[in-house]
Length: 360
Ligand code: AMP
Ligand code: MG
Image 1 (cartoon, helix red, strand yellow):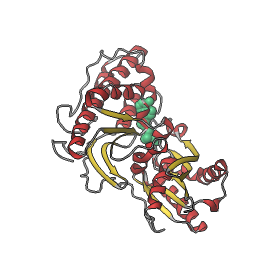
Image 2 (cartoon, protein in one colour):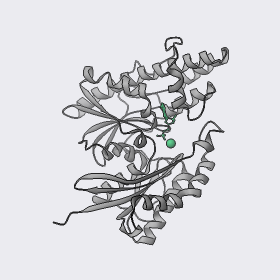
Image 3 (tube, protein in one colour):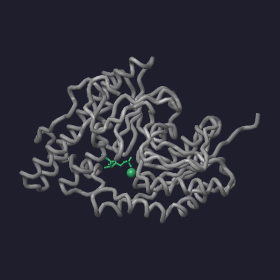
Image 4 (cartoon, helix red, strand yellow):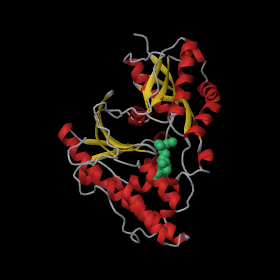
């Protein structure tokens, strides 16, 4: 039988990174031929957060150039691609439209299939760019827009077992950094300041910590920090100590909730629990170390994609596109972006809900 090689172009534009990548699958192995990422940090840092209209404009300014660059870097002609995959949700509508319209136009012009990829599926699959991890595994996704535990039973079979009921974890990092007048994005700044801070100086709340479920809440923690900041002199020592106390609190919350999620997984699957931690916040070294410290006691194993595949990138979208292409899951050109698009279709929308035991 002839050796089958599949190459898919992946386009990512759901938030504040424009990224285009070409990934190849051959002999069951993936190879990233190119992965061009243009972050919009410089644009949004003036505002301390992502401004949707500016994000959409920045994506549309650059998407065509990044597509050319991705082909050039991969040393490939346009017609050698098998399919084009775009992130079609969840995310900011303006950005999604840019990536989806670019993907569809290219697919139409080249007469190749168009594939609409769920951004969360991209994150769920990102570990496979570097590791031939076998299903099932537990995904802890912690990013600027998402915080959830999802059991990846196999490709296209996802079961969410926990989520945030208010802010995403990356948002909590960014908002805390903004209160402390640190730079944007806040996560790396908090991590940097925390290194030389006293993590025991401030006692911060750990919302939902007593609930034996896998849900998160960060808004009470944020309010408490806002109150302390309002009553304090925000000097360098204060910033370092608050960053360290915040990061320690987050580590405590994540460890407890991950332990709950692992227990829940044991009820659902057999064998050792493998936990993949993905999304921008997974770049945080103290979170990585703190999770790895429970490997022995919880009899589980943690896997972290490289940082370049933790933050938003086209390669994970191309990889998910390859999996869909192989299963003939292609989409029509009238597919519309879905700003809200859960990975587990049966998952209850939890924002603003009280996270009581057993609710999924
Ligand atoms: P993403 O949404 O996956 O593009 O990731 C962006 C989010 O990850 C932002 O909220 C960042 O503040 C956060 N982030 C990036 N690096 C770190 C870090 N080292 N520690 C904590 N959060 C981080
Ligand atoms: Mg981002």
